[in-house]
Length: 100
Length: 483
Image 1 (spheres, chains in turn brown, orange):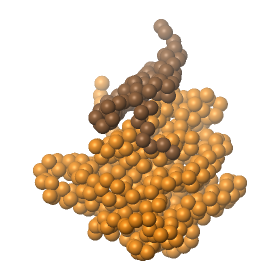
Image 2 (spheres, rainbow over the protein chains, first blue to last red):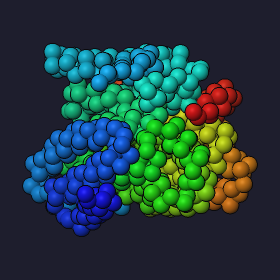
Image 3 (cartoon, helix red, strand yellow):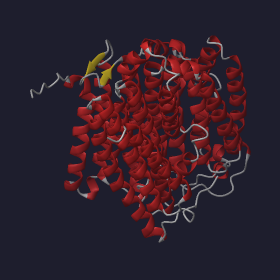
Image 4 (cartoon, each protein chain N blue to C red):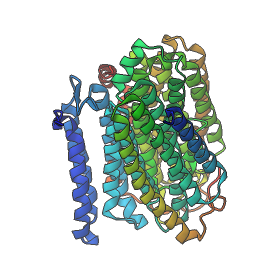
């Protein structure tokens, strides 16, 4: 059997990839995908802990995170579409009307 | 397998039930109402919030746990609920004529405000990290939409996108923190974590250390403390002004409520031994907020930086801790609700469709043309600066004395120095109103009975809390016990 620590390491790696992606990518949709990656890394961590601790709480939590992520996706994509209609770009470098 | 359904107590979530049903009712009613009658949705939601506030008062008293210890009604959460309901009620008053003027008079506007309030209540009453997370998300998702409510305005879109991307990013950190705490303690219940940590040293476990740091990042984003504040000014500037007013008060108070409950109840060890980290955060927040506010020319941005600075004062109350600190935070949040909403109300009164008139130079000579409005603005500015006899003074006095009493003397001194710096930019508004010639004709004010009512309530609150604070302070002191 694969030890549980490996899952935690994978989860940490996914989370880091997501966080770095948010910081260095410039396309709003890709940034959003990176955020989803972070949330899924959290899900993996929760499931691993739930397995390790033999408790259901972590698995229940994962369901809630998935639901929230779905709601967030709906709102987020709508916002991105709204901004694309007005500016015809989703590059966050060009979305810079307000500074300082 | 036998499934046991744990007992649940609907009375404890009666506020949330009332608000949910009414929010859904407004959403449905919106479809059947003709454009002419859309205003009545605003009146209706105001009425509902007032009724909910009355119900909230009756909940004061003994703490009640319900839903398998996931939700709690204690004086602390009731006090915060009152702050949320006051800020929601005033925000609705500010909105009724504002949404008509901006051409965004849709029923879902009020529904979203009510949903955001529900989220805040779940955060203040959450006794489980799951409830707090859900409350946070219900609140945030509603606010993402509200920030972008002027769909055809690019600034509003931009505010919404920035708020959404950074808010969701912060949620990721918060959740990873929760996962770490769950892994280390085996539960997400706040009481459960506290019990586990009472028997095991917290800071020797790297997972708890990592979890607590990630939680600080997550909550730090929500309360907009430096260095997690970069989204605040942009979002506050771009969002519809009524929503900015709402966002700067309710959600901030909600994030502080959750912050306080998690760190004082679940992780008291971390809170005490890490007070140096929070110390640095508080000092940075106050100083950066106040210094950058000086450079602002747009009043909405200035108020955004001022709200960052005020988050720093509130953090100070958390660091001071103890009954005195918590009571200080509660009082401060209430005082801040009145004065900040009032300042934004004046900004709305001066705004017109298409031109917000939100530059500080647009206030030149306001004192000659509209003396009463200028006096009102002065009251809010003095209160935000912490000049007696306004509410802001008592609030700051209370927090600073709590910090000194608990041995954080340097922090209190830095706080006072910051308070003096802040006088500069608050008084600049007063100076341009009375000592500059108006650059151009003032457009007619967009006053409506509701805006006047909102101004009266906020002025009354600001002055009343400043002159007769005893009753509210007594109430705050009764609400400090956390379970």
